[in-house]
Image (cartoon, rainbow, N blue to C red; front, side):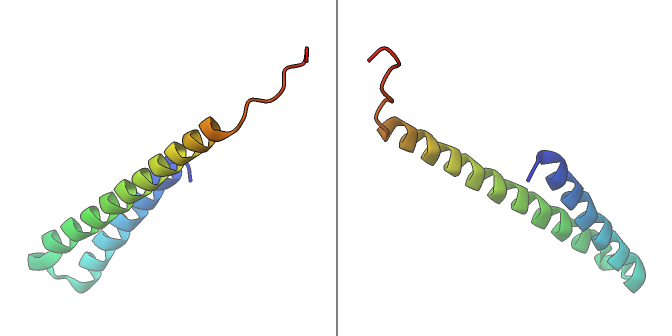
Length: 74
């Protein structure tokens, strides 16, 4: 996923949370539910970033273990 996709998912989740607050008219708990939506969206972004970072590290390690290809002059 690209960063733009993640940002779009974040705002879609936020909009759904706000919409659910408006539908239920729970103004007292709307701040809490909105906070939960924001927290869940940010947690998803952090988990995705960590997974992507670990995958990149793994690729670099595998790249170091591969033997060098023979040069053209040999």
